[in-house]
Amino acid sequence: MNITDPISDMLTRIRNAGKAEFKRVRIPGSKLKLSIAKILKNEGFIEEFTFVDDSKQGEVEIELKYDEFGDPVIRGLKRISKPGLRHYVNKNAIPRVLNGYGIAIVSTSRGIITDREAKKQGIGGEVLCFIW
Image 1 (cartoon, rainbow, N blue to C red):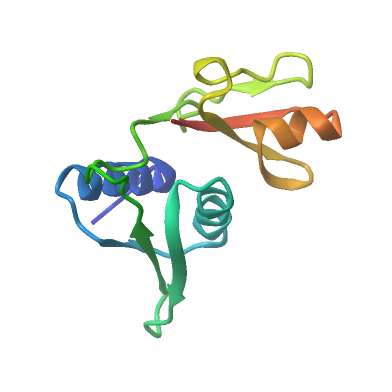
Image 2: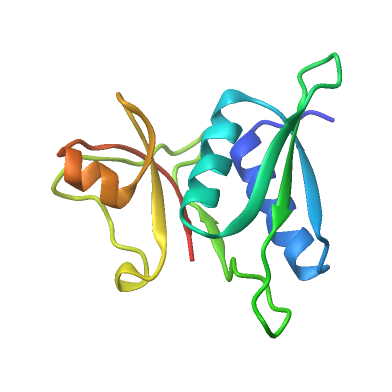
């Protein structure tokens, strides 16, 4: 399987697992995906994540979070910066997702961080995705 956009693949797997009401989803591993999973955990969108070593590149196992009605906590995911069209912003143009209800994940010179953290640090970067 030749995946040209691993972040889009990760978001699609999470979206599909939530719609199918799966408890866990496994995604081919990378440092970038671990950073995104860490942000999702810190922001309360997922229960837990672990790195599973499979003697190749490894896998990131994400435990999805559901509300009291059984609906996924992650209501939506949208890839913003794509391999064919990158989306860079400066510190003054970092977007707000659903008026602050969601988060934007930004790749900066100081690592993968949320939009709020980027504004606090006063740095811009590549807007990877929106999550709400």
